[in-house]
Length: 149
Image 1: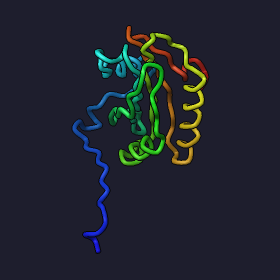
Image 2: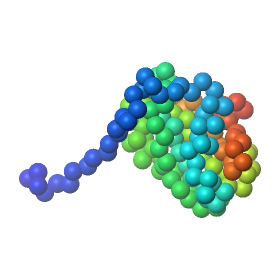
Image 3: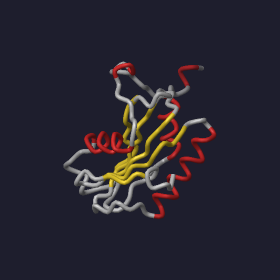
């Protein structure tokens, strides 16, 4: 019977010990780190969405790129997002996406998505600490700093 069923495997491998991993202490820390991880050849071409996964001391467990989209948007599948969060046993997250246009202000869709993820995260006792928008010149916008988280 077991040969007639597909195996499902999602993996998380720790390459860097969490004791050596940096902690996020501010939106500036997160904004800088996230910008450094963005592909500089595509940040001005297409939107993409990443999640920074954290433990209970805000130490970085990893960064996962959830999607890569078009010029003005990218699809975020919340089910895949939470599969990654739960598999990595993360208790905190910082959402992030880029605006190729260089515009720092979040759209209404950005705000609605953030609220939807925040509400879903509450069911799993996972905290959404921030949502950072990064732009091609390295500037960032923090939902938390602006009080809209």
